[in-house]
Length: 495
Ligand code: ADP
Image (cartoon, rainbow, N blue to C red; front, side):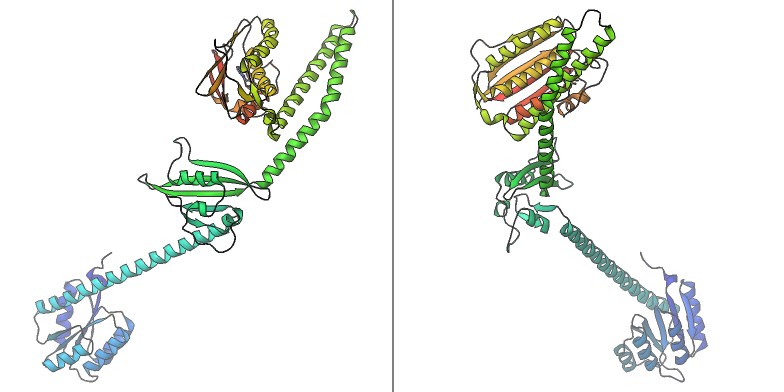
């Protein structure tokens, strides 16, 4: 922002009225604001009242000596430029005045143009120095703001209860807050700047941070997550995000480390509780179910229909509860890891044949066609627990039968290749809308629409299937079109 000439005040000090009035007129016409004084005392008084940019000072005046006035003005207002004017101009007085800090010197008599040139030059200097001063102040302010901002951010990061680690593209640690060093159990003196492996023992943690630091994150993901246990029963979750510049250049990664020990303990307690309650409920419920079945078979012919209906509903509901308890116990077993404890080479063809045979009557009951297609050459064995594979395929084929209308088709087939065995369960049933496709693998999630309204279930079948397949190192894929049908594909690794 430049300053205009009218923003500058000029004081003309001269005992000669003509000079005072003439100078005032010339300078006012140029847009300057001008004040006059006829002697030294008056000049000092004006200088005390107003901030003048320039003082035009006559050196020879009655009363106070001009050089003394110059000295006092320079002392009290060093930023004011003093231009000395005198009729008795000599080199000596000029030198003396300059020595005492005068900015310029003008002999009397002077022409209007001379005055204008000298004053304009002084004002130009004033403008330049003012601008330089403003820039300097601004720079200092910016530096101060930056410093304040940096120290604020540093304080916040230091105070965070979660660990924060910043790494360069080659996975060298640039920053670690105290929570991070505590969580990864880093003790004693250490220097930042080394590769992550220097500070963290867990290899997968280091791999993950190395990958995100290099920007090797799958396109559909913003960060990579990993959970692991440290010695001393501590569980940590690591969330690492690649940081890129606006131009898309990878700058490294920010990794957040969170202590999830409490959550893990809570999860284990919850699972244990569910397993215990389920176990306790299973026997009495089975007894009630058997007794209801017995009562129903022994009912005499003249028992009213409504009583017969109520009893068979009670038997159905009890059966539903027993199924749910079975599913919950399966889930607990999967969570505790006992499902894959009894691994041995398993012939998937034999398991599929057994399950399909067992479920054929269910399909026939709905006039459905249930087929099993196996490759001509025997499937190579997979390493699994046979019972857990029966649970997987039993659930998928039962679902296909349940969620397909009368006279539909359910096709089961198995193939091998690429060190894998692939089993598909395909139906031409109701299909699953896109928005439900991920959620049906969540516990207790069931699709509620006109097709499924009267189909009973627990919403635990697919989470069990997924839990087992994951534990076996495999995967499950779903391809489904509402109104056309669904295809679940289970991929199991051979070793
Ligand atoms: P449940 O069958 O006990 O409800 P699942 O976890 O096995 O529980 O299935 C969850 C939901 O997924 C079902 O309620 C159903 O809506 C849907 N589903 C599963 N398999 C199929 C299928 N083959 N066709 C259509 N919908 C299905």
